[in-house]
Image (cartoon, rainbow, N blue to C red; front, side):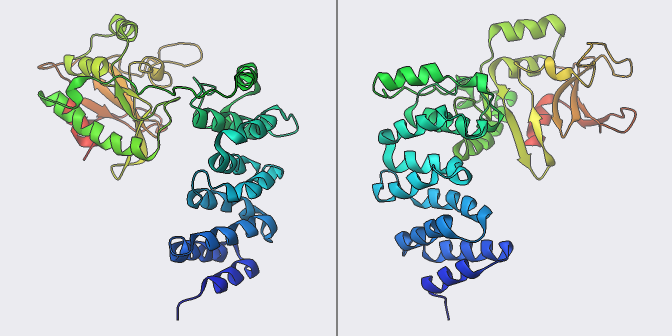
Length: 345
């Protein structure tokens, strides 16, 4: 016989094993989040207030946030409570903004100014305001506010914005993409278009345009000029960098169990550090083949294009394992275009 919602509630509040608690919580949400959403939210909120396992009182907030809808002001008192409790404040900020919108800003700004709070929590307050208001308080900063520093806080901008009545911003524009991504004709363009279709799914699930990820964009002329000064690249790879330069592209699939980071025009040169040259001294490593340019890595294992073997506008790609003492390269793909095809399989 199926458990009732009251029985689930009793199980949650009497459970002392964290793993069992998690399973019970998930079953409660799966069974009743649609048919009795309000009661399910009420149960989780009450546990966040009074539950015996303190770490779960915090973790439950992410589940609550998923179920609560925008402008459901009946939950404002709960989220006002969470921002007074340091162990609940981080996620409570998002809840307060979600249910009160603009009316929450003054309370959240007080958190930004509260020097008794952790830097991470204060940064989270700024990030959440920036996302909801579409103001660029988070520009050029890591997506995760846990990596921010005090000097990154644009407090004067925020206070000035407050004085002006919390004007809504315009947000960030999507990166500029090349038209051929949507209308591919050449073999290279078709391979890149397939890659972008894969990345588009990633962007739909998780995207923060203050720090875009998994985009293929048109590179700046300066970036390409610096690359061309340094190397003579095969035309296919150079066109890729010019028209479809990866921005924070990370491919996570069965082929690459550690994921694959694909370099773009903005980071190609600096990412040679640790492979062909010492990142601190700039010294060139003698055991590194000068004709191998690292274009991607998987858990620091390099993938290199061989610029000494350019044939018909392309060149083979080699890979090796790091930490083995000596570099032992094996051919991974006959050409860069083939490499693109492999990583999207």
